[in-house]
Length: 187
Image 1 (cartoon, helix red, strand yellow):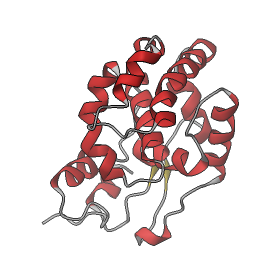
Image 2: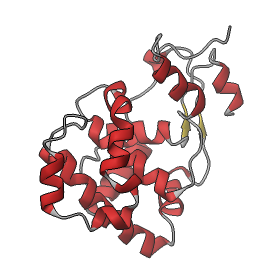
Image 3: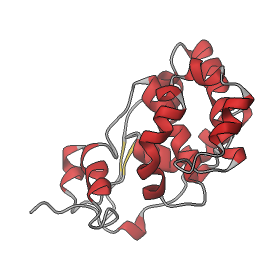
């Protein structure tokens, strides 16, 4: 039996996410956009809540194609506010569209969002060696800098804690505990 981080518990969806996605370096702009938007949806909630709604978000937000999302009309987003499969928070849902616009501007300036976002960790994964989940920080100087710059560029729902969760999910930091089988695999 594989030993893993404790946070997925017994939930099979959470276990699959932990084993297959969390902490794997992402360099695909569309997927980076999806992750940064979903992390913003998580604000004040648990990640499993968002994870269970992920497929609905993909459908509602054009598979997180930033160009298509940036063109979504207010009436479309207003209709999504009635969808019980989504987190029906007006500011959060509208933030996905505004983040798409900001995302496209970053792509124009840096050629790819990947190039821009990975610059906060000098282009490589920070390899942490936490022995316990409680040792893992919720923010770092890198997530502080990322949040500050993203906000300056017009991103919403993007504080330092959200940025650090994004960095963990996108593999910018390896925060699997040292006893977890994924820690070594991703080192």
